[in-house]
Structure formats: structure tokens, C-alpha cells
Image 1 (tube, one colour):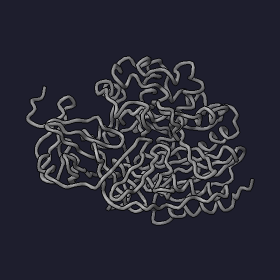
Image 2: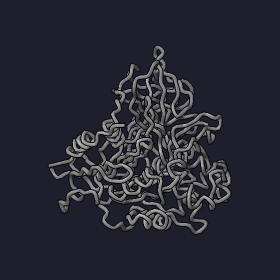
Image 3: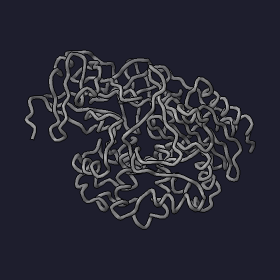
Image 4: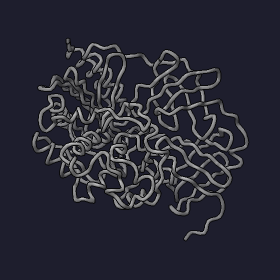
Length: 502
């Protein structure tokens, strides 16, 4: 087994070199085996106002990289407190409906089909910037006790499962941040933090940035459950997983164990980790994305090597970067993006979904994946949104998230004209107004505005901007009801007409 550390380091340096100059944010890449850091590549600025260089010790928000830390505790030190086969309602009795029947394991392996809280709130008109409180969010989930579809039928990414399991621990007096220190940080003498909200103080945290038309902007978000730390300390922890030594003993085996849908089909997502498979390659890792921060770690357990990448900027394609570095390190050839699908916008033959093929990408209900050639069409390499798509004339069929799909070309009609007017969701005091090809959602001068495109048969495609992110979602009008559909949230329904608020 030959490992090319020099070439891998050169690739990492070529990535970080793009962040040099012109006073731009930066990041760091660490390459390591189980025993030592083989390379640290850093570039750009940690703080644009102060001009501080980004280093291996710069502290960033990990975002969803946190999931593997959380799952490590759930399946290890806390396994006698909460079990993967437990129903959520056993620990959160306020979840009386279908959400409460989801198991802890399903909540963590992305088969629960819980709606994503932040995505649902965004459809009600709340921006990524709006702060929320954990007690209020739990009450909201309990009141809006719906699933996007029956749990266990397909895989689709959502943060809500992790939030609910965290709330189940809090109900027992167990705080994730405290257990992170006790079971991981203190034994390794590293510094990771898990603040309750974005606005809590994190020692050494560098600002996150996103680029607007007028230049780099400071990022903020009303989010919960994100650990923070440096690439150096994250790598120290990941090395213990590769060595299979305390406090990381047995963790990789637990997190990467086979997870299945209710029909027995195996998924590619474990517990806080995603499997990357192509050819003979089998790597595991996970990414994270917050407003202004990006992160990824990727491990090759068989060879005992890995990498971690962090950045305080929004525009880094961390998964692609990680694949490139790991491929060179291990002597693998990556598949090249591409496909033979016909570009354009498609709609579900039955239902409300839409799919757009553009360049080497497929965008389904607002989430985009890179496509790669397959024997009879195109696939994605993503484990949390696997795609297998085939072109048959003007039809695209296949699977997305392990669920069968069939898309056809849209037939424009008068759906946009039928949608005109005011729409309400009185239980959440929300209002939407459709005038012409514009949808106004929220209140006051900060209300997001989306442009609308007709997809036919009562379906519209909305496109809005929420801070650094473009948001595309579907509207499906049936009589006096209008359902909002995002990849991660399909539970918001509005009603037409005059509403007298309670």
C-alpha cells in the first residue's frame, strides 16, 4: 500500500492557494494518519477586519460535522440512557403524532423523514438570520406533528432528528456540550465547544463570511447544535478513530454500521457519517455548512488515513476538495462528472416535485448534486441524496433518495393566474401574497420576495434569496389549499381567502 503524501499535500496547497491575496477569508486542510499530522496547509484570513492570517488553530463552526460527535456519544457513553430502537415519544411525550413514532436510529440515519425545522421556518417567512429558542422550536415541532412521508421509506437529509434527540437528552438533564467535554475533549486535551446558539461566546471563534455583489459580508444565523473548534483539534480526535483507541475505540464501527430502510434496502448514510463508494473505494466522512463556514472530514479506515478541511467562507466545495485530495493520497482515480441527460426543467408525472438538469448537476426540490455517468444514465456520489436517473425520450425516471421517480416536461397553463391573491396559515400567523409573478412572504420591509414560474397543473416554482443562499421551492395549489415543497420540508400548507386572526 503506497501513500503519496507529497502529491496530496500539493493538491491541498493548490486548494488553499486560491484563498490568498485580496484580503479574503481562508481556511485550512490537515492530512494525517492515525499517529501523526502529515501536512497542514493554511491560507487566507481568519479576520478581515484585523487582517489575522488563518491558521491550523483558527476556530470555526463545524456545522453538521457535529453530527458524528453527537452520534459518537449516543452510541457510546449515553447508550444506556437512550437506545437507537427507542421511539422519540418515549423520551419526548409531547410528540403524540407520527414524529413521536420515529425511532432514535431513524432520526439519526436520515430515514425518519422529519421536516427540517429551519427549512420549514423559512417557508413561513423567517430568514436564516432569525434567532429561535430551543423550547419554542420543540413546541413548534410538537404542534406541527407531520412527516414529509412515512418514516423508513426513503432517505432524505434533515437536521431535526438530531435536534429532537438532543432535546430528549436535555429532558433527562444531559447536556451535549458538557458530555462533549467529559468524554472527548478532556481525555484528548483538545478544545471543542458546542454553544446553544450562534450568539453564545465561543473562545477564539473567527468570523464567517459570504460574498455579496458588494463584497465580503459577515455571516450570522439563528441556528442550534453546532460544535466549534480548529482543524488541528478536529484532526486529533479523528486520529483516535483511526487508531481505534480511547476515547475513539469502537466508534467508527458503530457509526458506519449498515443502516436500512424498512424494506431492507441498505442506505449509504450511517449515524453522523456518510459512505463514499465508487469502484473499490470505501471512504467515510461528513460535511458541514453554516452561513459563512464550510467543513469536511474524510477517512479511509482501511488504510488508516484521513483529512479535515475547514473554512470561514461560504464558497468552498468541501466534498469535491476532500475527494480530490484523498484520491491522490491513496492512488485512486476519481470518476469524472458528466451525463447524457437532456438539460432542462422537469416536473413529476404525478405529484408536486420538480427536477432541473443543468451542466453536470441535477437540482431536485432545491438541492443540487453533481452527476456522474453510469451504465444507463447518471448517478450522484452522495449518500444523503443518492440519485440514479435515466433518460427515456423526453422522460427522466429512476430513483432519488432510494424512492422511485418519474419526471416529464412541464406544460404551462394558467396556474399562475389561479394563484393570485392572499394565502394564510392562521395557526402560525403567516401570510403570503402572490401578485403577478412575485410571492411576498413574511412581514414588513424585510419580507422575502420570490419570483414565480409556472410548471402547470397548479404547480409553481419559486426562487428567492435568503442571505447567502438561493432558495428554490415548489408551490402546489389544489382548490383553496397551497402546499409548499422543499427537499427538506413538505409540511406547510396555506389557505386562500380572508382570515380573521384569533
